[in-house]
Length: 309
Image (cartoon, rainbow, N blue to C red; front, side, top):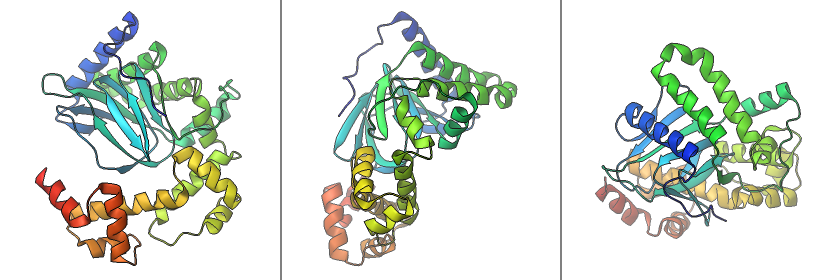
C-alpha cells in the first residue's frame, strides 16, 4: 500500500500559488534545520538541506505536509510516498521511519507537522454533531491523501499568524479546529473519526497501542491486553494488524528495539544492559532480533551510526 508517485510541481495554479507561499513562510520562520517548534502550539516547521533517513521512532498522531521535496515513509513492511500534492496523516502513535528523497542547500525539503490530539477530534464531533464523515472500511492508522486548496488555505492562515503573534492565542485554536474539520470531511476522515469515538473497535485498538507504548518493557500476554481494552483476543489481533500492519507482539518488539538503540546511541549503554532495560532476558535473542531489524548486530550498528554523526 503506497501513495501515488510524487509529481512536481503541483499542476493546479491555485494550489501552486498556495504551495509557493507556504514554502516562503517555512523558509522565513524555520531557523536552522530539522523540526523547529513554532510559536503556535503543536506546529513544527521542517527544513532539511540534504536527504536524511530517520531512525525508526514512535510517531505521535499528526498531519504532515510538504511544500517542497518528497518523502518516503515506512510502516512495518509497507512504504508510503507523499509530496506537495499529497498530505500524510498519522492517526495513532506508531513506530515509523522515513527518508527524504530530494533535498539540497539550493533546494531544501520544506514542510510542516501539526500534531493531532484525538480528544480535540472527539470534542469537535460532540459539538458539531453528525458531519457526514465518509464511511470507509477501517484501514491503517497512517494514510496519504490528495491535498486540496481548502485544507492548504487553512494551514496557510495558521502559519501566517507567525507574523502576527498577538493574534495567535485567539485565532490559532479556531483555525486549528477548521483544519481538523476538513480532515474529518476528507475522503479518509473516517479513520480519524474512529480513533476519537469510544464505542469503536479502532478506539479500543488505540487504547491497546497506548498500553504498549507505556509498558513495552513488560511481558505481554495477548489475552490480558485484550481484556484490558474489552476485546476478544482474536478481534484485537485482527484489528491491531489492520491499523498498524503489525501484530501486538511485533509492535512491542519494534518499540523495544528502537528504545534499546536510543539508549546505546544517546546514553552509551552496553548492548546487554540496553536489552535488559527494554525487557529482553536473553542477550543472544536481543542481538538476533536487533540484527534482523537494523541489518547488523548492536556493536556494528552503533559504530556505523556514530561514524555518520
